[in-house]
Length: 82
Image (tube, one colour):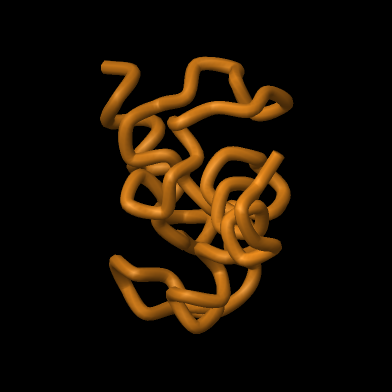
């Protein structure tokens, strides 16, 4: 199905939530990109995925993900739901 193992890995890292989440945390050095805070951290969809966490989805591309601490994630979510 894939021309190389590297292509398969790249696809899953950008389309499957658990792998994309891990890649985003690693990319952001396990710190909040907004305040620089540490743990606990969560990975946020900049453009909401609207419940597609369990699906293969382009919403999980790394350019749509950011690592946030819990307070920053709450503030982001609250601002989007106003």
